[in-house]
Every structure is written in structure tokens, then in C-alpha cells.
Amino acid sequence: MSTPSDRIYDVGLQPERTLLAWRRTCLAFGVASLVGMRFTLEPFGMLAVMGGIVGAGLAVLAYVLAATGYRRSHQALRSRDLLDRDGLPMLLATCAVLAIGVLSGFAVLADVYR
Image 1: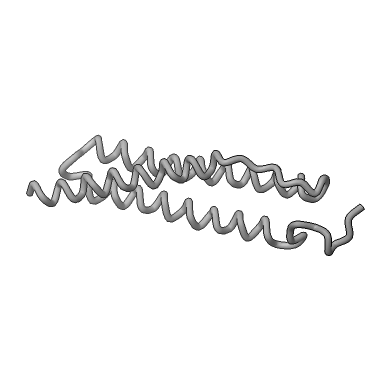
Image 2: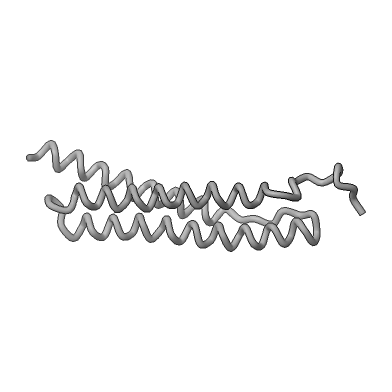
């Protein structure tokens, strides 16, 4: 059995702080996608709506997977002292950022061709 000083993680709030950081990040990605949709709606119509919904949906999905991963890793750390995580939330967050970038590119193109 390991002593508290031998553990590789903070027994207290480290996993919760990580989840809160994911919440803030995904909220920012979702809001940025919807704001990008708002500014590209007039020139691009349904294409802008689809991009905004995809970006916001990916942000929500990334948060849901991060929350599920938080529960799984918290349980694994408590029971086995082993961190059990995957990279799927990071991949989805990256896709949400790419959607924001595409919407931003559309906004720049819309401004150039006015």
C-alpha cells in the first residue's frame, strides 16, 4: 500500500480543477462558434449555420466526454492509483477550433468581397 507522499496525484481537487478547465474551454469554443455563425450568417446563410452548429456541437461533445473521463479517471485514481484517460476530448476540441477557424475565414472573405 502506498503512503500519501508516494501518490502521483493530488487526492483532493486536481481532477476537479481539470474538469473545470475543460468546462471553461468548451464553453468558450461553443460561444465562439455561435458568434462566428452570427457574423457570417448574412453572406453565407445555411453554410454559416451549419458551421456554427457543428462547432458548438463538437464543443458540447468534448465537454461531455471530458466529464465522463473525469469520473472514470477519478475512480481509477482512487481505486487503483492508475490514471486511465484517452485523447478523444482533445481531438473534438481541436475539431471545434478548426470549425471556429473556418467560420473566421468565411468572415474575412465576406468582408473582403463586400
